[in-house]
Amino acid sequence: MVNDKPVAHRSDAVIMISFFIAIVLTMLTYPDSMRYMIPNWVLLVLFYWCLVAPDRVGVFTGWSVGLFIDILNFTVLGQHALTQALVALIAVSAARKILAYSLWQQCFIVLALSGLAIGFQFWVYRLAYGNEFTLVYWQSAVMAALIWPLIRILLDRIWYRGSQRSA
Amino acid sequence: MNNTRINPFYQFCLLFVLSVGLMILDNKTSLFQPVKTIGSIVRRPFELVVGIQDLVPQIAEEYYDSSVLREKHERLERDMAVLRAHLQRYDAIKAENERLGRLLSASVESSDEFLLANIVTSNIEPFSHKIVIDRGLESGVFVGQPAVSPDGVLGQITEVGYRRSVVMLLSDVGHGLPVQVLRNGLLTIAVGTGKPDEIRLLYLELEADLRMHDLLVTSGMGNRFPSGYHVGTVTEVLKDTSQPFLNVTVTTSTRANYTKDVLLLWRSAGQAPGDGQEASARGE
Image (cartoon, rainbow over all chains, first blue to last red):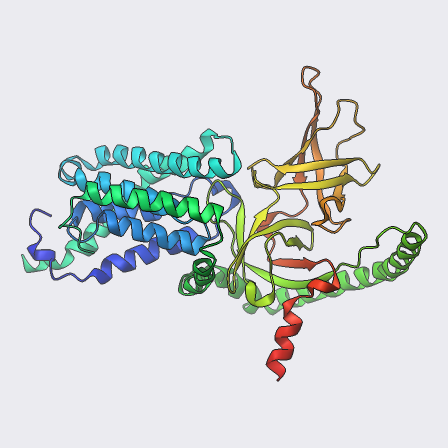
């Protein structure tokens, strides 16, 4: 992650497949009791790529993926797009600092970012329907933070596998 | 995916304005209906992969063990016998009801044109209670169309794509439904609470005659839902004298996570289901 040369040959396919899987994970049927615990998979994956490959994945990618989800889910166009763009902006701008943190410190950043995303999406939804906000919605952010190390390790393995071999 | 040329911040500012514009336009106009129509096609590859999830228990349960299959078959036959026995009376009651309706010169509902649909995705966002079904414009589905399950009312259509549409469930906070207590005909409105399979009743006076386990059915008011479909049963009645109204919690008859089949209803002959047209078009 210090220089991009070892991973430059990696195709964008890996990134796209990871987003595909993240969207599939979002669309799975989960039991009712887990309803609010499902982390924002796409946000986690986007966050990862913004950190390790900011030259390829950035604000525009985040926005496009978000818009794609809006189209897929029949949600208000721009809702997920804006959320993901915001997450990408924060991740890209502070990528170096965040990478210097330990995995556990990163978890807190994921918690904050997920919370921000939830708050924002809720706000958009509230404008339309007037929901009441309850604490259960934060469960998803906590889960995202807990799952982040797993995502980080898994994607690191995939992304840096080639570079380690060549090194 | 090249972002290096423009400063990410300016990029974000541009996209922020664009997103807000999109959200407003999408909310206020139907300009993006074509995009929504495409959405149902773009979903395909994702649904194929997600579909594996449903396949796994199916294979394990049904195809593996023939005794399970036989048992299920027997159960279905038993159910059908019971239902057919009940149906005999239904026809007579329906005919009588129509006669009485004519006597009172009331408008008689000639509803019950329907179309079967399957649930494709059972939740699309944590806050909203919405599901995606596999019927859309192609089958003549329209916004506001009632959707019921074998157990009771499920919700209504809020978005229509080409082959997919979105049903807003009763439990969604954006959903309201005119209902009636079956026991005494008390009319009220049921709105979603945002909790799974839970709704509450509005504007019921403290003295209102309402008990636990009362069954609620659609009242047919508002001309959207036909009357008589099960909505739910009262599970909690809280009488707080400092409040002007009763606090009533109702559990919906349909448990959204456990249903597979959805029936879309058409009210009059004027809005016949597109399925028939589709079939005739294919026949030609």
